[in-house]
Amino acid sequence: MPAPPRTLPSGFDPHGVRWLRSSYSTGANNCVETARPASGPLAGLLAVRDSKTPAGPVLLFSPGSWTEFVTAVR
Image (cartoon, rainbow, N blue to C red; front, top):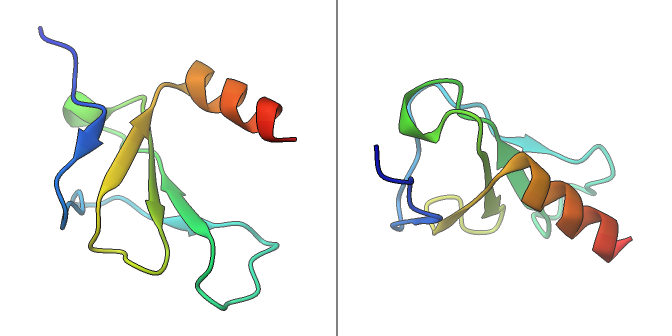
């Protein structure tokens, strides 16, 4: 099976995926939202999008890549 794409086209919103925001978000829509697709070819990846443009592009990360990114940002 080929590797899944790491970016998805604008407007992607997988069925049944619940997008989450940080509890530190002020509600001003200036944060990112994350989701974990539970099934299909995207299962096990972390989806990330800009809360200002929910119909915009989605980035996909493996769990290890996301952990490395968050660790580096801290």
